Image: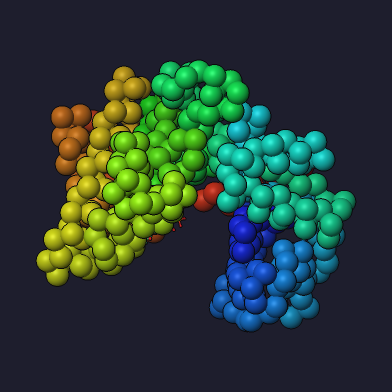
Length: 396
Ligand code: ADP
């Protein structure tokens, strides 16, 4: 089957056309600045990227551009729209309603809308993408794959917040967790690579990108994860604070005369490693600034690593053991220094890193030594492939 995978944001739309038989990406690209002016990127497998300015007043126009590019006589990869067998959509928040991917119906769209309050920046954009595809490809089955679904297996003690219980029953305020598609894909790969029984393995997944979260996967199920009701919780990230004492918010409000909304913007956009370093949200810039002796950049990296260590350590305890720790996403896949520094703290578990293997980039690799008691790996994430697999299964 040929599956079109769509990841729709409020002003952007990422796409990939995947042949599910070979799991090959036939073409991929990005629509940006939707509703502003419009940039369109298209890349056919084995060819160079093509970037052009094309007006995109709305997402429907963007989806049309994607279809036109994929079916283009010269540069396309399919001869007509009828070759697209199914569309898989990344949907950020499925609340407690969706513990699995699902075929999209009108009722499902309503249920996703019901979760909009939980992800006001993301879910409405996801629905816009779904509706645009429905209009242009009415007979093609569409599937929703949720970032939160994998974590619906967390036990109550992990997802409840210690606030009045009525906020959970009335408003569904609880920990949901995100990056579920990535945590699921990467943990499965680890079991395959190491030859472990996925239903018995204990794996800690460190998804360290601009957004970052850690997940404890015990017997193929997420039992604990670091993001919460929203993706603001847990590790410090590029620009997000992650976990802070909620009292900090009142303190800043009083001192600086700020409204809650302004404080939320600070915690989402001006905090994290950008906030501490004052340099950048990007680890490449922090590495460069640290090497130049910038003390705040060093402090930002050290704080980030410290938090990763404390979550990983906590999750090993939650699972009462660990077979493997795996790094993925932009920082996890590329920053060997971060991996080394994190793993230094787990000597007591018998972890040892082979620095030569740790220097490799862009491939699936076991970076621990042969005699390391717990295996440490790097596995590049592939959320699109996971979406394509679920879409194929449900569309069939
Ligand atoms: P997201 O999907 O959350 O936007 P990514 O997983 O793409 O994020 O990760 C992006 C981040 O990865 C960058 O902001 C940067 O901090 C980090 N990164 C990417 N390449 C490197 C590298 N070579 N060395 C260190 N960090 C890197």
